[in-house]
Image (cartoon, rainbow, N blue to C red):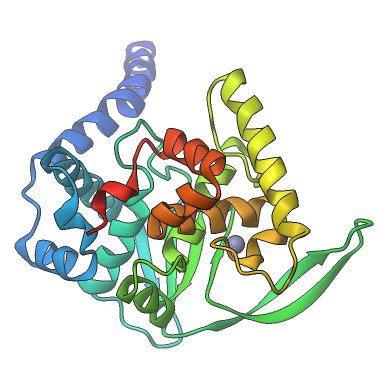
Length: 270
Ligand SMILES: [Zn+2]
């Protein structure tokens, strides 16, 4: 009898890991998108209205799943509202729209501060020596399942969705970057050929940014010159917010990002 119970329990394990996630996903998918959330989405992310109906529907599903799985934690006295949750989720899900993804499966917590926050960061110099530095940050992405954001910076990013600065797109691009275990400026690309052309184009563009005349303005922010991971995050901000300029001045980089994100944000611009 005991052996039968043990066998039954062992049999339930795959059922739990395989069947339950699919069932809970199907339940969430069938739930209507709350009206209040839709009002927030339309107000906070005007590009939503310019997506095709299919992409709009997919974005709503992704937001529902995201909000059902990720926990938001208010810091320094900040109370988390639906406006914060939907605004952050909508932008994060824009990065995984229209393509197969792991939907940030390793991310569990989103910490939100009212404004810039102080954090101790490890800085590695060119010969590999590590020192610590206390800095005021707008956002931070960790490999241990958390993202940290300053709400006033999130709002600043959403108020102007065409200036190439967006802390949510930036930090969630870092999350995508580290899905393969290393935050090195190359997210999961799946084919050898894709990694090869990514390495060529991103390597070339990163070096161009690093050696650019500091007085010459570029559509890609200087912050991207810090290292390849920052370059990918900054290039993602530019791709979504200034796609026309990026296509004009960095066409190969634009093509790499369009292939990766499976989207062309130029179609959303008015
Ligand atoms: Zn960064």
